Length: 336
Image (cartoon, rainbow, N blue to C red; front, side, top):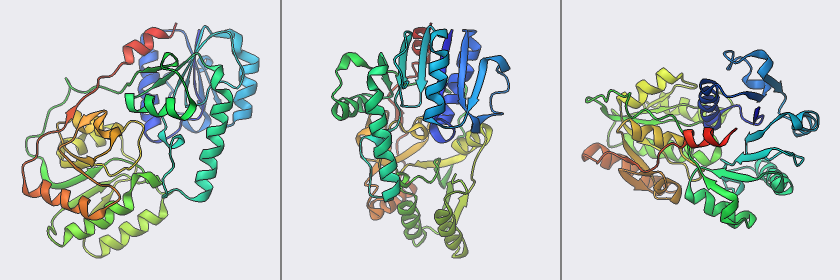
């Protein structure tokens, strides 16, 4: 029996990938037991009740789960960056997908930086309890080796994502004045810079729209959006969106803009590329590892963001190109 340990995943891009991974495992008819975060309870009702255990997001509770159950499994996939707290006899794979452990930008508060530092020490303490680390890109592999002095034999690059290439009807009448940014309001996502840049864009193109997906917990961003809306700017915060709603946004919006200055993967970039969107993105290694963007800018410089949006409106940009493929079948094949 396989154990999928995703105890520390409950939102954002990690949750999107978890949903896809669970669905694929379920379809494969492999014998899988799922250890999941209590906060996602209700999202996986299609799984047999006896095959799922929900826990609070607790390293200690997870430790005692392994102490009690570790001998039951032939292989373990830790989908949440942190290996087991004990060495188990089964084959263990740990999927590492969070670049904040490599470098923390100044946008994070002191409290957030301290928490990230603590989590980094936890990963370092348990790093020998996994047989292989799986990462999403060659860039992540390089950063991983540098951070923890690992050899290439311990790391495999196995990106995965839902591939829509053969299922998409491309809208030939995209709104050229509409910019889309699918991401929550984490500090590294640079929403404040984008909003300031969009305010400057409004001086030249007052009929533009900016669609965002920021959750209620980021009250400072929501307040800034409210002020911009009162000033007549076309900023629309959609909050959480269903898969069908996201598909419509990708299909109808003229441009995808992604100002994040720090990513392990950039799932939104991959999805936008699959919809043949014109993508404006930072000139950074994580971007060039997965797509060929239509236009680049410097995320810390709002002027370059504004200039990129003006160029996108006034010129016909090339479609972005996806440079990687999903390795979901290879991942499932390794779990026995």
